Length: 269
Image 1 (cartoon, rainbow, N blue to C red):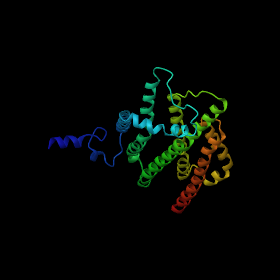
Image 2: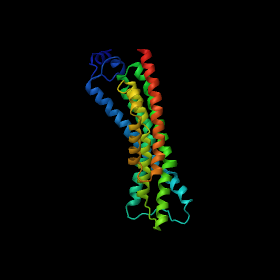
Image 3: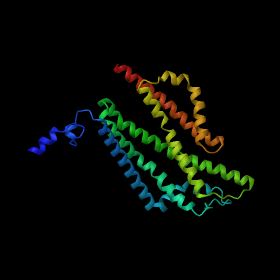
Image 4: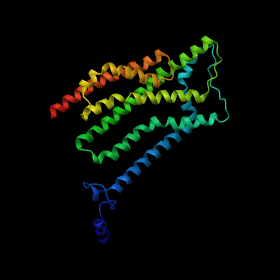
């Protein structure tokens, strides 16, 4: 069979048969090709989710308005309806909802495709850590985003409404300002909730010791409140504390998880 012979005579760098390259190191251009296809799959998935959000944009928008509608019930004397101030603001909101709204649903697929890309370079022990790590990362992000959506965003809106009511200001909130606040808080808080996983990974790699974390616990508290002040858009200390408290609890949880990882590593050694 000449065709089979020709295929077998091809070097691994140009052979497209997966069996031909199995167990052999990939060439530089093969890595680039795999990276290209990984990025393409991520982009296609992101676009499809963004299009789906665009199709059901009205229902998606009603879901995102829950924090505002919840606060409106507490201040019936204030007009908290959103209103556009420029002609193109409505189009900007549509793009913002589709583009930013697709990030969270697409994140699990991004992690899966990335795991497929790096899997050949991992040892069997490291490979067993990929799926749990990805699931924990996704769970932490969703917990942070949900905490922000149901607690921090309503708290921020409530503080703003109370200030307007105290000074007798006329509220003229725009969709752009509302969705920017919503996006910044949900994505920012969701990303901030990932830091305990980063701490545990550093302990697992031997780059950080649990004793160091315990020694600098007071410094970590200061750093957590600085992060809370940066992520929360208002100077309201109550909202910042609401964000800082779960971050500190996650820090303590990371210390416990890191101690368990250290004991496991010492037992194996």
